[in-house]
Figure 1 (spheres, helix red, strand yellow):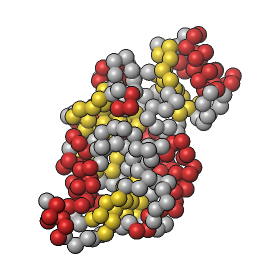
Figure 2: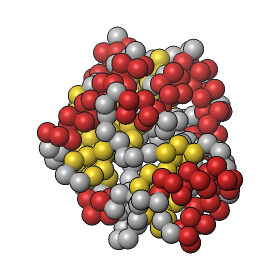
Figure 3: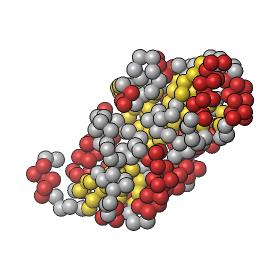
Figure 4: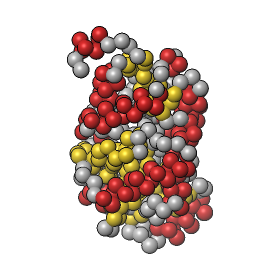
Length: 301
């Protein structure tokens, strides 16, 4: 729909896409979504989630590029609570509270979703050292990731030897919060992280995020690139299973999600199920942005 046609269409309301300030200098994937909503007669605004803004002026708010939430997690969850009381928030605070802590992966694993072997480290000192030595003793390399984090923040890849264990313990002492310990899956360097974007419960499109040579971080901030990926039936089955089990736990059909997979042997494991602010890579599939816009408007009537 052209600009002239849009200007003649009666304004149906306002949709807020919650942002962060400053917005990271990466490719703007949200423009296809903004265009799809505007074509349906809605004004679209992009305030920072912590801005002085009247969220009640929006018919709905989507949490999109709030990529600093992990730095002020309690404050962000409180904002979700407040915003959900004055407008329709996707996703709402119950989903955010569940998904912000990566220990949700343990719940999904109990329900049959495959994940990498994982040890959860809540403490420090001798107990943490014992857990690392016992778990990682059978591995060549291991990986530490905070249970609350984004953009590969405070992650560590280390070798499973005396020197590596020392680095890991020093890393734990210097970072707050609980951590998850896993074997390092070097498939990420060959195959990348494989992501299936789900809209209203169904696969929409998929992308492959490839880190810079020798790195494991799949975000553009760290020099990674992404490309279209055509998932096989096994990958789609895991994505569908993960989303279905999450919906059952939360008691809600999820509007959008990104299912991040890694190759392990001949199959896949769930790396993360992103329900809060995942990049949805609409530049690779504007049709998926159309699907999300339509699904959102059907939800809010």
